[in-house]
Image (cartoon, rainbow, N blue to C red; front, top):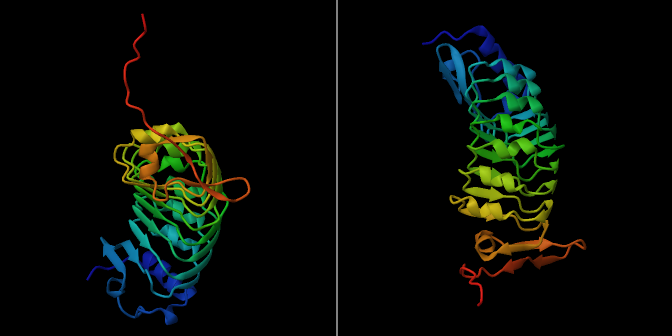
Length: 268
């Protein structure tokens, strides 16, 4: 069996100890080689994947996790982890999948995560995260899934977000976000699912959304958007463009009926 370098093993032992390993659903036998531990994938003596979802981990993540330099997948979905997301995770340059969803993480999303240029999926939903989306989130050039719904994220969508041309799924619903949605959303040509409902976005719904031919699902209801939208966009929205006015009362947004586009002929 592969001889795993001590440093990676030491890091996992620390993780086990600080997240109440004796109470995990599937425990590790620390006397066994690391390759025998459940959820650990090892290649060339390095940990490349750690999948401990729904395993009753509790407590705060150790900063040392950021030293698992070969890690490509970190999945800690549905545990009882709390405290801040360690900024050191931004050192995991090989990381493609980061799933910390369904825990009790607090504080802001670390700006350092924007260094993860290979990241394809970032799932932080169902936590207690606050603050704003990182300014440089657009550095995640390969990101396909951004799921941060059901948190307390506030502020506007960063300008750099509209440069993320690999994005397919964007789920930012049920937060406290505000500001407008830029017509630059049309840059995200791969987008298939856009969910912004239950926030405080305002201003005109950009008609540029119609340029996103791959958009299969959209829900931007329960915001403070105003003005007119086309029938095509209204039909795409799961809740038929139900918006909330200044008094907090829900109403259906005005839908412009699309006229047949006929050439205008000058009269004699």
